[in-house]
Length: 250
Image: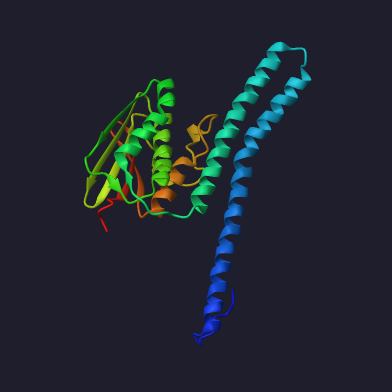
């Protein structure tokens, strides 16, 4: 960093401006380094499986059953790669996108997300119920909130057994949104680490389990707008709570 003179004149102003620029550059370099590490970490396993399946198929070119099995493995791993890449890029955008002011009606955003995830919930024979209050206008950019809520609801749909409940209520200057699924709930470790990047339960480390970025992305976006994301367990399963300020609250 540039030494900032104590004279408090134009030279001091210039030195402070240079230091702020250097801080932004360092932050950008660190984000790039982290993204590179995240991508290499998450893509290594599916790429290795694809290569092994291809080598196996090439070693048995006349065996239809082997060729079919290998191509099925490649297709499954390609789906996994697509999911991981999408989530890594979403995490990168959540770090680099500047916060923008705005307001969002929670109820409308909730129904939009539920409609978007309807094909997935239908394929898993799940019911999604929504209960919203009357005053749910929040101090948050709509796109940021939808991305955060989508990540949370998608996580609930993937772990639910038959039902996901979404409840929104305004109280004490805050809008509280609970997303509850009737799945197995969070483990003791999950309650502590599930908001960390790429953390997954050992039992969830299977194809189609996701990259472990959804809740981390939601947490980052909410904190940027002065909100919070908390995890707990209910008798029926896992609960993820999103809290943001009411638009009328200072």
